Image 1 (cartoon, rainbow, N blue to C red):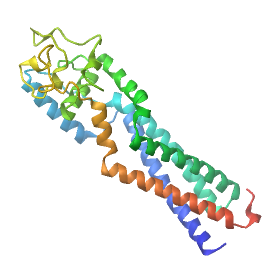
Image 2 (image 1 turned 30 degrees about the horizontal axis):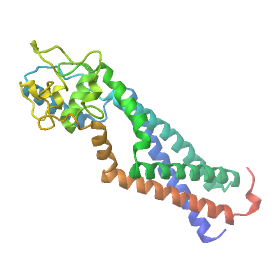
Image 3 (image 1 turned 180 degrees about the vertical axis):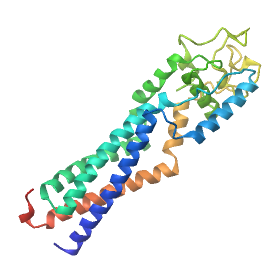
Length: 277
């Protein structure tokens, strides 16, 4: 076995150990979110403070202690756990194949890693070229969380989360204010005991005050309301265009390419006598 193959074995083992540690971290994060623990306390506190300030400006007193993004985070948490398990199993396979130079293990590892690499590459290209392929599925899941929305005076986790999100991101609904049409608990007939005829949630208003005309039918416009600005596109762009996310994706794809390259190199240069388990 040549120098390149020896270096390849070292790289294969070291990188897979790093990936194994990363997979364990992903599992821990996923389990924490599923268990209801907040690993994003600083962000949650900031959102709660800004929501409380906007509620006060709107003349509404609401207990915001139930603010939580668990309903939104659970699908992501399960995806993180699944990814952690898959990465952990694959990295163990790579470590075993690299340490003991077991050909059949390396073949399986190369095939699975190459398949995952190609799938991820296609997904990344689709996301950055045309995200519409994911819109219907993702948007449908997010819109399902709106069914329990009760408006500005809601104290349940769903209402508080949506109010905080719309207030912080300056948006309205998933696609627009029309996402709130036909909900069982919205619009409310009154706010603070005063009758209202809302077209959009109050948190969609650009300026929060005790004058709710910015959210009422006939007076809500794009000048005083974010009614046509969906939260989905803003959050999608915020995540996808984040420098850290772009760097992480590039590094992960590069590492996988290196692993595939060295695995194939080792397979092509290894002694056939080791072709046993």
